[in-house]
Picture 1 (cartoon, rainbow, N blue to C red):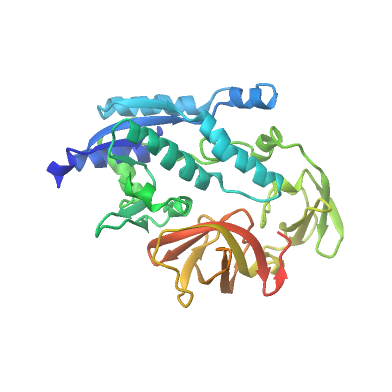
Picture 2 (picture 1 turned 90 degrees about the vertical axis):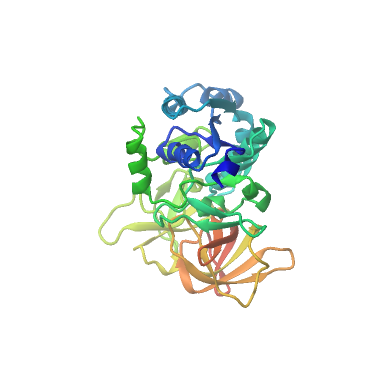
Length: 378
């Protein structure tokens, strides 16, 4: 196997973080010929020029710091590092959709689209053009290439599993993908990085929007979407405050509402776009936060044919619990998903991701949410 792997060339999406760095090490151990590629996907000054905005979003681009870390890692592991620019692709395929969804008062997940359109499409196409056999990423997921089929499994580290963000990948994309750290726990990844004396061994994990990074999210969005202030009301119609724009809030949100007073904390329980009203209630266990049925669209299914009599597992948000669900396929191909044990804060625009045990079956976008026959105002 090792001899065979020496004939295979793999390019790792080297991000400047510890997971992709250890991915290089794991592939080298397996005998692959490995190189790295750093993706540049966000250019604040360019995007501000497009919008006609002043150059105020970034003082120092975090991506340049990551690039220097990736360069250092490539030097320490003795591999060649390429740098590729996908700024236009990211803007057109990911960020424009992201803004459009927010503009329609939905809560999108750009990381999922970023994986589908950039990391496993634009990046993959570039890698194939350059003569590589596979691409590899530092995601916590596993791929089974055996028996002439390709299957995806959850990462071994349940706290870091990232299959939720990979739910829109096709089998064709997965056939060319490797996830070298998917069989490791995070603590072991850190340990390996330290054993190899990598400078980034203790670098903290990145968070925030894919390729945009950590920011005050509401302030960031205001650069692109004009604020539309309005009233905050209870479900009974009592006005309790004012909001900056309902697009900036998500179902189940507690922080940032600016509401006080005695009693339980306030939570977002719904939206009324026609009146530009944000709906809130006291307490995290508000009945209105729960639902038992949803319509899911934009289905990507990589598992065996859906069995409507079977009970699958579904996550309605990253790090959410597994929910037992039944799937009914509608005439237009959308899924009607039933979860009789109820789930909290199932949010339109977010992903519903389906599993059969450890195996990822696919996913789609939550479109409508119901409790029995009552449609939630999400």
